[in-house]
Length: 383
Image (cartoon, rainbow, N blue to C red; front, side, top):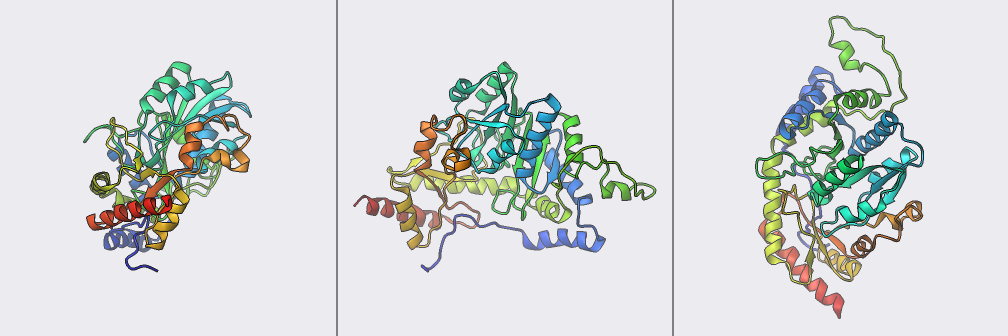
């Protein structure tokens, strides 16, 4: 193994502060959903200005709840369509299939987000919603998609797994506030790291209340609520079939500490991206950030020819890389879905996308080393 490897991701925790927050759960004797999950939800609403927030065990759970609740509340039928992107982690599109709905793939733009014209071309009488993914913390052409959904009467679901801290302007509103529902990820390598958790944010408080029941197996009153009243009540009602998607106070404790530093940490990420911008060779086509946002910069992505060979070369010198993501229509379960084979930009990008190391432990010399080795790798695989 080469000396001083540079991993693609590595989370940074404020260890002592985080352990103190977790210790409180252990000392009180309450580690499930309760005082810390409620505390995180309050902090997140204050930070983001989303009117509602429910702490969950993952963003995937949030996406599934979003699709399930919209289907139930608006009377969608099996086979109805949600327009989505092929350049995403598979949980985005799995959430559609979980509810027996049809993912319809639209093409991406230069930001690797949904292209509004391609989305419009895919709308049919059975289209019910659009699933927008803010890849790498990018907003892409989100507002154009929002206007399209408003004009066509479609619901807008935001997969904001990478978008914690993405804003429209410095000190401005958090991106994604216009979506009907947004799901954020706080998995270990995300900008706001826990071990694994997420949050779902509805505009509608009625949908938020429904999520609270469905994420706790359809039970109308969680254990913490039953123990914090004047008298403990063992009785509860189960009116709906739900899932065990609730978050817990250990993860929320980690999240509350991380949230305090999110703005500072995202500034560091953007500074790393600026160094990359100044050093990378011309052969690297950067995936640009939308000029309309201040991005979280969860990813730094480039497009290179002979990508897999470049990955191998970088691995030999201790530099970790990633691919975000493989065109989902290449997977057998999505190969026959509507739109498969008609997303040429996504197919082209999928063969060239490369994510470079991006984490808080990087210093400028690390970025310089990555840029230098990337240039060498590109030159080597040409020969």
